[in-house]
Every structure is written in C-alpha cells, then in structure tokens.
Image (cartoon, rainbow over all chains, first blue to last red; front, side):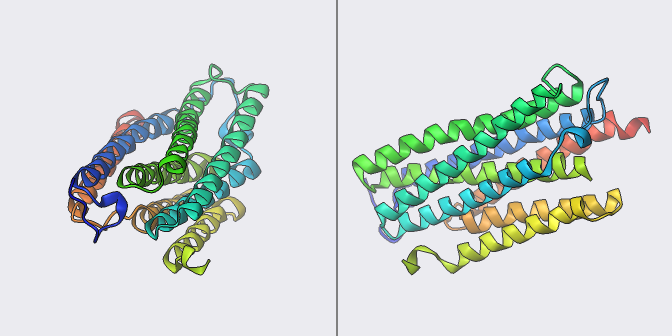
Length: 198
Length: 94
C-alpha cells in the first residue's frame, strides 16, 4: 500500500481518498432524501385537520437547546479531526467523546419533545401536519441515534488500534456525517420551527 | 493546548452562533412573513456553507471538483423537489 505522507492520514492512500469521495456521494443522496421530506412538510404544514398547528405546539426553549448543543458538537468534532491531524490521539478521543455526549443530550431533549407532543395530542396519526412533522424530525433523530453508535464503535477502534490510515479515515468520514446532520438540523430549525413560530 | 484550538474553527463556530442569533430575530422581533423568510433563507444557506468549507474540509484535495459538483447536484435536486412540489401542490391552486 502506497502511503503519501504529504497528506493527512485519512487521505494518505488512494483507497482512503476514494472512500471519502464515496461518502460525499452518499451525502448528496442524503440531501435529496431530506429534500423530499421538506417538500412533503411544506405541502402538508397547513393540513392540520382538527389537530393543533405548529404555532400551538412549538416551544422555543427545547429547540434552542437542541440547536446550540448540535452546533457545539459540530465544533468539537471539528476540533477532534484537527487533533487527529496533528497526531494527538488522546485529545482527539476526548473531543469525540464530548461530541457524542452532546449528541446524547440532543437526543434526550428530542425524545422528551416527542413524548410531550404525543401527550398534548399531536401524535403521528393526529393530522397530515403532525404526521409529516414527526416523520421529518424522526428521520433526523434516527440519523443522530445511528451516529451515536457508529461514533462509539469508531472510538473503540481508535482506542484499540491507535491512529492508523484506516482508523483516521473512518473517523474523518464519521465527522463528515456528523457535520451533515448539523446542517440538516439548521434547516429544520429555520424552516420547521422558526418559520412555524413566526 | 493552544495548538488544539485553531483560529479558523473557532471563528467558524462563533460565526455559526452569530447566524443562529440573527435567525432568532425572526421569532423575537415583529416582521412580515417575506422579510422573515428572506432572513431564514440567508442564514440557513450561509450556515450550511460555513459547515461545508470550515468543518467538512470540502475543498482540500484534488477531489474538490467532484465533491462540489456532487453537493451542488444534490442541492439542485433537493431545491427542484421542494419548489416543484410547492408549485404543483400549493401555489398552482391559489
């Protein structure tokens, strides 16, 4: 295997470079997936039937907590990748742990929010609006949940094997996934919550 | 310790918090729907660009062209889906 030492570890072999490019292509498909969810959301947002509207059920505090927590986690995983590039395994792992903990806080708040919605009568079957709202939020939440497990397993590998071209590549690809989830959340924050509360 | 916190990423983080605060004006201040949507569209897309460039290192290798082409393509399809759907399902009936 040819290792190019002028590049960061995660790009150092051709296979690694192609894996990163391949993951970007996957993210392109993810953009389209969330595009269809947003299209359905904007179509159904006013179809509230006898259920509540967004204005009645959205609350700013949990949404703000979720946003700041996810933005911060995106920052800390960025620092993690930076630490990885200068070969600081311990610092990198700490930043990844902080990222995953923030992800866990996000998920906790979101689960609490879902329970609250169902409790006040805005469940999955209440109206077209609540159905698409919970589907859109749920798809994002499911991605975060998956990311938490993925990140945990990558951390275990880095701990066991150290920073090699393989583990660095996996960590970098995970960081791309995590940043992407933050970008999707920004759009949910803006066009589901803030637009709904305006 | 200092080398663990590169200036570029700290500035990127501060900027993304700032964009969030600007977006929040839509909630806290009284404004028309079109003004609010303009602000939200601007802050959301700039925020996405900050993530892409500062944190995702999209333009770092010789795959830069392929990566950006792919992202633009994804965004184009997503926007065509969203606005095409709005056109056929909502605006077409007004």
